[in-house]
Every structure is written in C-alpha cells, then in structure tokens.
Image (cartoon, rainbow, N blue to C red; front, side, top):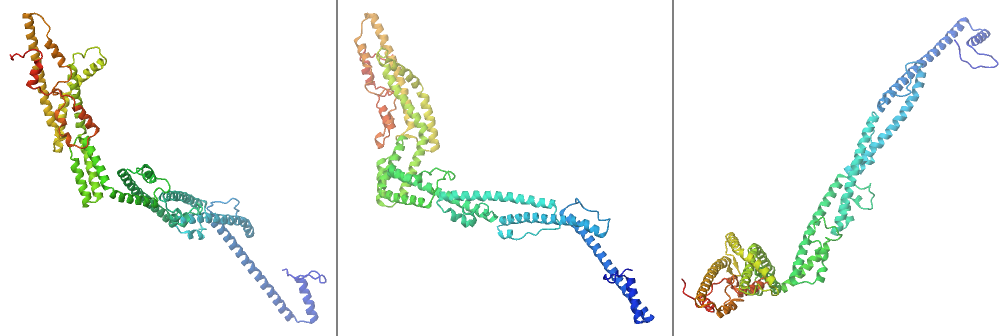
Length: 580
C-alpha cells in the first residue's frame, strides 16, 4: 500500500515503510512498550482502511453519477431527435463500447449540435407562429394578439410541423392580401361615391376605421371582418343615397324642362342648369362626374323649381291656353269635333273662380292631352285610309274632267304628263271600291271595340261611306243612261242622214265644246260632299285640314244630274225622243 506524503529533499523519498521505520526509531528512542506500539499500529492500519473506504465510496458515487449523466445524455439525445423529427443523426457515436468517460466524451458533440439545431428550430417556429398570430389578430380586429409571444411546443419541432405552420401562414397571407385588395376596392368605391355625392371622403372612411385614410400605409390598413362589413354597409348606403339623389335630381330635371317648355324659357336660362338636366336619362352607373349629385346642387334645383312654380301660377291663363292649343291641334289632326270656345270659357271660369288648384288644372289638361294622343293613335290607321280615299276621289274628279277634254291627245305642252297621270288615276280609281270596303270593315271593328261611333269632323264615317256608295251607284246609272241617250241620238242622226243626206251639225259641235272643263253644276265628281260638313264648328284647323278643304273645293263628279240639267245638256244637239 502506498501512502501519499510530502517529499522533503533532506529526508529523501517518503514512503509508508520509511515513515514506519522513522516511527520505530522514535519509539525506540522514547522507549514505548510493545503494547503501546501494537495499539498505535492498529490505529494507523484502521485509519488507513477508513481512508480506502472513503476513496472507494467516492469512486462508486462518481461512477454512478457518470452513468446517470451518460443515461441522461442518451435520453436527451433521444428526446432531441424525437422533437426535431429526426430518425437518425449523422455522426451519432456508438454509446455501447468504451469507458463511461469515453462514451460521454463521444456523445457530447452530438448533443451540442442537436441543442443548437433545436434552438434554431424554435426560432423558426416562433417567427412563423408570430406572423400567424399577428395576421389572425388583424383578421379578428384584435391587434394585441400580435404583441403576445407565441407558445412554441418544444416537444414537436419537426420539419413536417414547421411546413404545416408555413402552409397555414401562406394561406393567411393570401387571405390577408385578398382582404387588403377588397378593402382597397371598397375604399376606392367610397372615394368615387363621395366625390359624386360631394361628401368628405376622409371623415367617411375614418368613421369606418381610422387606418383607412390615405395617411396610413397600405399594409397598416385594417382588414378585419368588422372593417370589411362596415365598409360594405357604407358602400351600400352611399350607393342607395346616390340612387335616391339621382332619382330626385331626374325628377327635378323633368319638372324644370316641363316648366321651361310651358313658359318658353330662353336657351340662356336653360343652360344655367345643364349640370342638372345632363343626367336626366343617365343610369346610376353612368353618373361619375365629381359633385354631380351634391346636396347643394339638388337644393339649387329645388329652389329653381319652386321659383318657376310660383311664376307658373302667375302665368296660369297663358299656360292653360297653350295646353288647350296643343289639345285642339291633336284633336284637329285626328278630325275629332270639339268646341274650342266653350273649352276656353270653362278654363277661364275655373282660373278666375279659384276653386281649383293650378297644378290640378294642368294635371287634368295633361290627362286630356294623353287621352287625345291615345285616341289619335287608335284612329290613325283609319284616317290614313280616309286620306287615301279622298286623294283617290280627287284623282277621279280630275280624270272625269280629263276624259271630257277632246283635245287631250293633242301634242300640246304637258300632254304626255297628263296622259301618264290619267293612267295612274285609272288604276287608283279602280281600287276605290276595295278601299271603301276596307274602310267600312275597319270602322265597324273600331266602333265595336270602343262602343261609340267613328266620326270625321263630327260626321259619322260609316254614313259618309254609305252615302258615297249610294252616290257612286247613282253616278254609274247616270253614266249608263247618258250612254244610252247618246247611242239613241247617234242612231237617229244616222237615220236622218240616210233620208236627207249627209250634212254637218252645228249643234253637235257646240255640244262638244260645251262639255270641255268642269260641269256647270259641279256635282259629278267622286269627292264625298259630307266631308265638308260642320267644318265651321272647329276653330282650330291644322295644315292637313286646310289641304283637305282645298281638295273639297274641286267639282264633284258622282252626284246624279237633275232632269233639267240633263235636258239642258242634251238640248244643245237634238230634241230628246221618248224613251223606247
């Protein structure tokens, strides 16, 4: 057994044997007894055993601690690999061979590297989770969520879990981008609507959220559900306000135009409100000019309408008579008989009595005008055919005069034009019976549908058509009778020439010259006589009616001739023999 001691150069090398020898020399010198010596040696041996025991115990304890450290290191290594999601690790030592310290020394670098990798992984997780937490807070409208440190689960730091977080972060970033784009679209729409409505854009969007004004950066704008909802409601409210304002402005524009037309307002005065009337027929989407629907503009139009209404009340008589003129013109074009003087007297009495509001009177006249237009529209088809019928009768009258002209085939100036007109007139005259039949059918259908009689300037049209048919039949009979008389006279003259010889007849020449031009009594053309009846009752005559009256002045060619006229006509040639 070796004992540790302090080496003294004077004493030499100190060992247990040298110390024991020194001790014996001291005992010898002192004269210790053998019993005392044995006791002291036993005590020294015991103390040496105690030292050995303590050393062994410390060694055992140190070994146990090293084994525990090695076990903990292995467990830590396994936990790190599990947390990082690593099934294996490059450079992982073999921990089953070598001494304990060798095993510890071999595992320490791997642990250090895995700890470093874990810390880096935790930082990555923390960064991703912080971004996720911040975006979730922005979406939820709770910005304090982004200020809190994220709780990283250190038991699962695998790349798979990190990829899941990163995928979720990308989805949230995409959603944030979409929400931000939607917010910017809403803000742009609010800006445009506020510009059109003349409203303060900054105060409007600031009421929704303070971050939406232009002073804030794009990324700092609120994208929360509440902000999007309030923006959508704001846009809807502004669009509804725009729609109502446009509707109101268009109503005011129509009122202005009606009042201007009633009072013949000059173009210069109308141009002052071009900004009001320019959107009269525009849709809501088409109105984009800034300030086009501002409240002050609408109020300005309202004030102008009110001013014109007051002016209209003072000019009520003039406006009412103007509407009456319009009504009479519509009815005159439709050939509806009216009493203009009575209507004007009634208007005057209503205005002077004050029993009716000006607006009510004008509204009633507007209704009459609307009903008159409807009535005129329903009569248009029949009136067009009446016009054709009257034109055909004119051509028939002209053709009668043309056929009585013995010089119609002479090579005079304009003869070829008259010849062409005659050809067209014959075609047109041949269509008169079918035209009359169509007129009768349409008129009866109109009367059955309306339950009233169809009148033309106060005269029932069916009665006119019936009279025309009767007179046309009489005219045809008269023509046949005249042809028979002429044939009889020619036969009689032939017989006389046979008896007395051929000689010219001055009477026949006189008779031939007599029939050139219109007939004396003016009652043999096809123009209906009753079309001019009651014409003096209508005080308002349109251009068409004046033209119709000028046509009616032509001589009629279908009324049967009286007996005296026939006798006077025939007596110019030969005496009329008795009818066979």
